[in-house]
Image 1 (cartoon, rainbow, N blue to C red):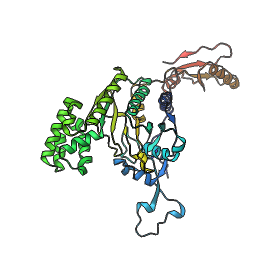
Image 2: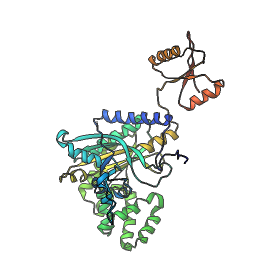
Image 3: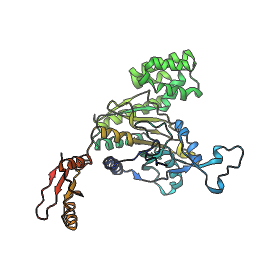
Image 4: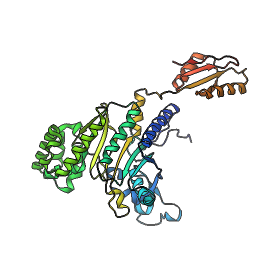
Length: 416
């Protein structure tokens, strides 16, 4: 049977040129986070299934890759098998659930306010399509143990620094609060159990507009009065931002917190990037309890980073309330966009040293080492008959310089 050479559906191979960019981007992000006091940890890709399915992960709970029980634990002889009978482990769908478990397991060894940095692959059984993979990398920073808005301010500022260090400058931070969403939607007359579905529809506002939102709400047969009130609220909040939130039942202290984070974040940013209040920012994960935020880049139809406050998830493991806030860079989206913009790794000196078959290869290797000691990254290749075509290929592979071996003097030339 002929082998299927394609990666598993939703997975992908990464060629050297892209891997080089990915490694550089990851290195810049990690170094920036470390410089800002975040500590690198590592958690397993595999988690106990109950930790994943009880995590309020919204739609992601439907996308968990479950791992079959092994050996004697897996019994197919039962007449009615359930998922509990078949699977006891799963692949992590994000880095937040593993972090929460990690913190509770290692709490005695960690500072009271713990600033965590994680980079790793996560897995979701999504419908595979361009730009959306079933295995992808996330870069997270989280602050656990700080209930003040200093956590939000630090996470937004640090993530912005990581992006600007990569030359990403034309971005905007969008900010909202789940408590605001809930207060406004319930104030308009929707029931508690309707909240999540209403949020899903409001989240589409930028794509379908107010008429589309109204149409979808009516299709769900919600109260006409509630729908009218919500549409009016969306119009008013879009114009007046936080100034009218108290009119919709949002507690004064919540409005004050939101306005303070916006004001202080803008003060720190010094117009290097924008920070805007956006009531239609939803973020679908059910574990968010307060602030939620995303970073929109240029005019892309999606965010390149997102996060928020989740004060209940961590403590659920040990029956305590432990404040926590996190921000995650969408690594795949960021790298894909940088590659579309023809991003080049800076200060990279990749040189190909060409030699003839008649040359002594030990001498060629020694010459390559001399060049490496001067700071070049050097690969040796036999010189082809059609040199121009060969050099074009090396340019495509990411080399920017070449030289033809000579025992005495050797000229290093640019590849264009």
